[in-house]
Image 1 (cartoon, rainbow, N blue to C red):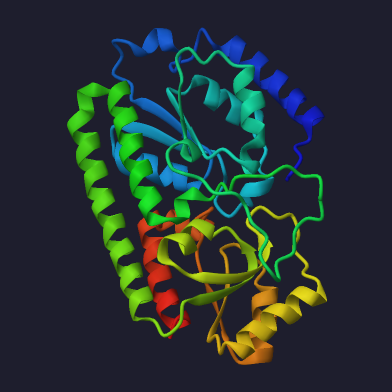
Image 2 (tube, rainbow, N blue to C red; image 1 turned 45 degrees about the vertical axis):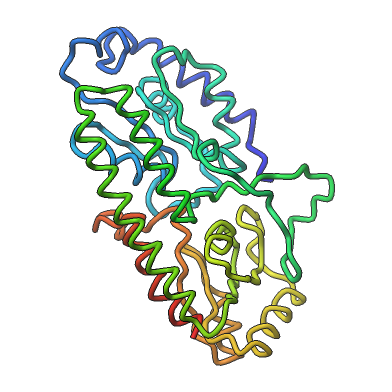
Length: 321
């Protein structure tokens, strides 16, 4: 589990809330001025899947902001004073929950939430416990409590449920644009369904049902949905970046013994372990996107959950054949 720097967070929180209080009378985002005002709904999101689902539903009818900067590591994010003010002043706050959002509870507990609607991805679908299967390194904390795996969006089926539920909540906040929100959600759900169908076809036609990820593994829900066995280096929220020799040997043997043609890494990784294992086995290193975040260039070019999962269709076809 990642431990937040509580002292630093408390200082940031106190500073942000003091500044927010000073600005309250001037803020165009205050609940007192929203009624009867033409301003758009304000939606603040923690990471990329939250942001993408919200912007796809909202279209041009709401202002959607992502707190996590493109290219940044999602598990080490801590809010700045301006981020905290944005959360305080928004109409809807969309977050994942789980280990990487440990800071959220402390922030929300100190805020006036009377005008704010909360949407937590982990509350929308059934979650599973994090697991450390054979060959995977854990963080060595034997006393750590059981954690639920937070990477719920990696299942396209879960993503469709979350988009639908998010749209219902946005409609409740802004019924004037209900038809637009519902139409946008239906269109995006159809696109996710197409990707889901494509992935199922690839798995059904594949020669194998096993993948190797020489990296952290935030793809548990993805593999569960498509019936894939997996071997990986670290859990999805692990703080480790350097594998032990034992882990490298285990994954290398799996690639050789099972004739695995592709060794995956996830986005924004240093890719070193995947490259090393691929180099020693003749396998091909490839990206399997977990959609935690995107690079700045991908963000600027309009990458979406659907486009990233479409890339996974291509990668998985090569890995399973």
